Image 1 (cartoon, protein in one colour):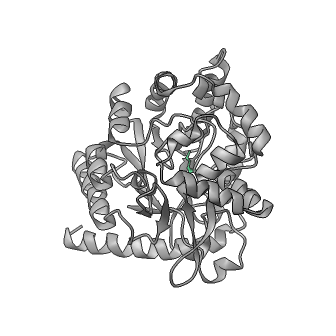
Image 2: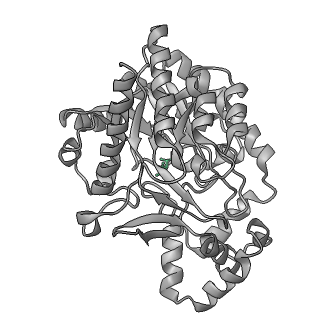
Image 3: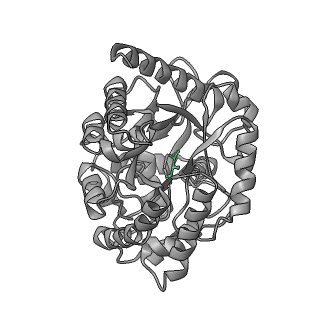
Length: 393
Ligand code: DNO
């Protein structure tokens, strides 16, 4: 497996020489400064790639080449947007970058309610608390019908949280919920969120699937031609958020994906943390089912709670059996190697990490501290080395 590390380019307080000390050899990055829907020019890609290469790395995965919301909504004439997307793909391929991670979550990306939840033993982690999310939706956003999305026992707690909250608490909650949006674009306050949600009135899972199908049909043939691998990132969390449907949340969704356009180029980013937040998901079993389409892995762990809350555990603790999962990936690599496939090494990155030690004083992108991720990488590296040794690889 190829050890990689996410770097946010000019938005990342952590530098490439610092990342070098982790021992990872791949960089996962994107041109976060380019607005969604615009072409990534070959020269902009080349300049970014040069920085990565000059620091002694290989740009192994683009995360993400974002999809414009109009494509997700299926709104208006999309010809230009699809052309632009294909042009960016072709420019990336020309620069030797051939794996693209993207997501099909409407409007927002990963969602948490706490960026600084305390971890036993010290440090902090990212947390999704059903009570606070319900308080946000029902009492701050005042989204009609939102109480139906929560277990009945959560509702009085949400009310109590809201009534006791200070304006600082509410600001912090809004900030945490918005922190998953990468790059410099599209952060909302309550008013603008309410406004933008109107564009999704009447939107449902079937419509989103239709639009996703169209995207795949438009893009995968180009990926095939260019020898590229597209890998969709699962929904995080794997449940509807703000009443917006999510369609890459479980095994059925992934089956739908791989069967809708049956091509190796139509693949998956196996994000163990995203899938792992839904109690119905057995992540190693799902990985086994879609193994041949896994082109990238995000490895992290989740501890779930009965009311729908969860928090990010250390990489080897939590509810997902990480060694079992890694074994699936190693076996898949072996299978590809036997087939003589060029892409037999699966890149992975330690996804997120606890905020530990000097992370608590350092600036970093939420979820992406240096020490916490380094701990994760070291633990995962140990598991990979042990399993590879046992398997005689
Ligand atoms: C969170 C990330 C996601 C991911 C996008 C891919 O930490 O895994 O933001 O990059 O969903 O498009």
